[in-house]
Image 1 (tube, one colour):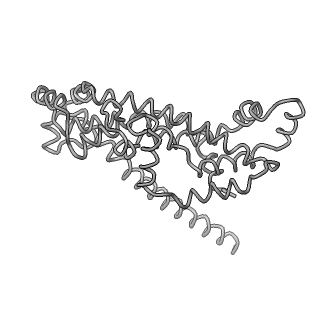
Image 2 (cartoon, one colour):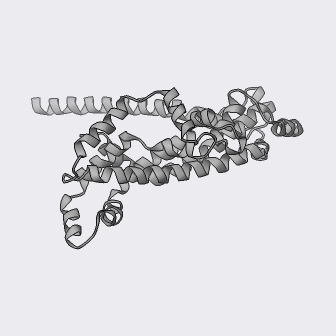
Image 3 (cartoon, helix red, strand yellow):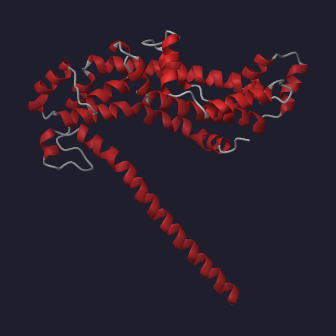
Length: 299
């Protein structure tokens, strides 16, 4: 009887904990999603309903004029194209360099492995600072070039995570067998290690894609040519400092009778900016949990 009562009490306690966790999760999801839903609703609404505060969850006076205004600006289109290139090239380059660095560090026979690790770890904790970094980019003649936005994506932290994944998930006997069959290290890396490392590659790629896509600070420091502006720098000018281009200002004025305002155009620009990341995430999500778990072990 006592055992049944104890089991019943434990079961009821579990139900209470689960209910509290469910309510907390739903509340957190609501707090995180509502601003995005509101922005989407405003971007599809007429300005008169937005100013009267009638837009909450769903658009009022549905129309696409704010998107027509946002996507008609040449600077935004150029920024979009530039950002796609910076994100693609930067991610591929960073993942490639991370693999090339992590592979030898995962092999026990690699001579000089410990000094390399100490050197890399030291640079992770102690950096030169912003001014030396700026001078380095300037002296390498990368200022006002696309290289200033592509190269800095390599991270020591990513290298250590990748090396840990190799050590934990790929038996060293595979490399030894391949060596006996006549393969060299480049073949082993590209044909054995890389195909077996999809979870960590997907996780690193997602982090790098988001990082490159949202990056604006390096562009603000090193890029003066407007034709090289990434989208985030253009958006920052339009949204935060609110310096719309003359082209956009004239189009907003032309579309004003159709219910377009600066606020609806801003909302449309925000949606256009974050949409690619939202679309990419579901394709990488299935690898994300395993990649995150291995990322928690950095020994």
